[in-house]
Length: 323
Ligand SMILES: [Zn+2]
Image 1 (tube, helix red, strand yellow):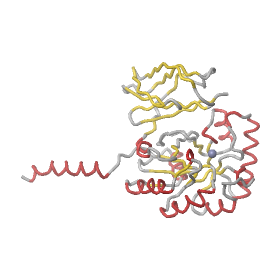
Image 2: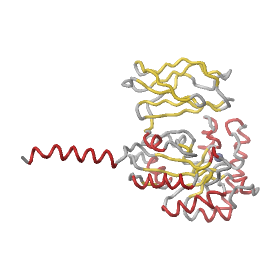
Image 3: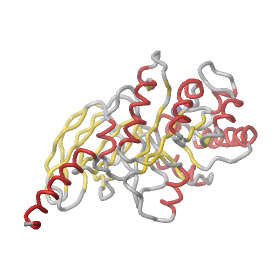
């Protein structure tokens, strides 16, 4: 008789687990900009939304860890737990110091601020002072986001080096350490910029592409999803990193600005996929013998073309910059 009861008990436990646990997938790095500053909706996170997100992490068993912990695990090629979350803040806006930081302190969540040095050095309104940044560094880490916040994929190598030299010297002078991590301004980058960051000795470099991080992630192209407004947090948390992906076409930004074809090699077992084109949204596509071949005619707006490929829960976004 006991045996007859057991399956239903297991079934009950199974149902219970479905309701109480959220499916977890890979580590996720998020990026915030402004806090409680409704003047700038495209870069702002309200304080009530921030609390909601932090409560979600807490309730569903996520662990907010330091960026150093993730980078060190990636360097050692260790397995990356599915419940790791990393929080980064770009651009050292004053609203982080006045409104965001108290909430991070309340939850005890570590964070990393990527500093745009010129804004603080030249005392731009809306930005923290060096003194405030030093106070912030008692609770989280400060890293490098360039001196001038230029469109670095579109300036000369000499200008990039000049920016790095000036910014790194000032960083060292104000904070007494050399930063180890870098974030591309505007999430814009290309091979040349990536090579220069390696030459300058950065250990990890972060972009601003939706995605996830796991064992095997390229340390010089780490994905971060932006949390602004009312983001699709659960969708972001459900992404795994798509590593078995090779872009056959395009391999660069189209010369006339018209994207005609997306041809990508993915896993042989894949049957269907989604293609995301920035400014045009998502489209379901078929996969034949591990190849996506999507013929289109889309005008690309701006100098930054982003194409994402999603297979199952796995996603990879690639950036192509106009020259
Ligand atoms: Zn920035």
